[in-house]
Image 1 (tube, rainbow, N blue to C red):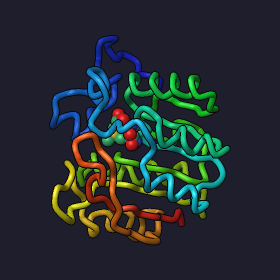
Image 2 (cartoon, protein in one colour):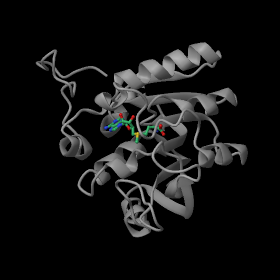
Image 3 (spheres, rainbow, N blue to C red):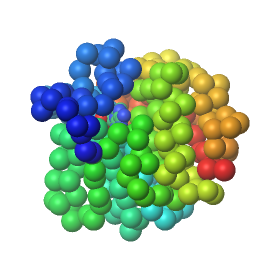
Length: 220
Ligand SMILES: C[S@@+](CC[C@H](N)C(=O)[O-])C[C@H]1O[C@@H](n2cnc3c(N)ncnc32)[C@H](O)[C@@H]1O
């Protein structure tokens, strides 16, 4: 990610506006990866992503938006898909690249802001958002949704796995079905195909994970 001219070398946000999550925690995303695995960094791909891939849900060039240390991207790449994982956390990307090398998997990882995906100059048939959408507040969502649309081929597919607000032991940033559907509503460039209850694994829930939504959303 190229930093805007005049960005101080020690700016932990690399010249971009801190997200609502970063403003709330007072720390850049990168810091989450400094002291051991982050709470969501479970060391394997999410079962929901593995299942969607096994059902043939991923095709063409794939973008993993907010890929973290890359387990989902690496799983998809191991199936022979062409995958680009992007994230603002350089530490996570370095881990993802190291894992790709160790496992002999060809996957690409780049530092980029999910609000400015058009700057990648690329387009994708399938996009994955595993745990990124739910970190954005209502003010941020329209710009993020438009950014996703700007790099997704018409007829392409987006999968969003996010914390849901239904059930006990919900994760941080729980999202309601209505909020999720509204974000990709009429005029957004997207058609919501389905939103189904699922689970997302974390390091702070038991082996069944936390309540989640798995949304399948088509680029119109
Ligand atoms: C909850 S973590 C999920 C990481 C990964 N998808 C996983 O399942 O392990 C959210 C990720 O989104 C990244 N992220 C947050 N805001 C971002 C932005 N504006 N652009 C790109 N990545 C962002 C964070 O650095 C973090 O790695």
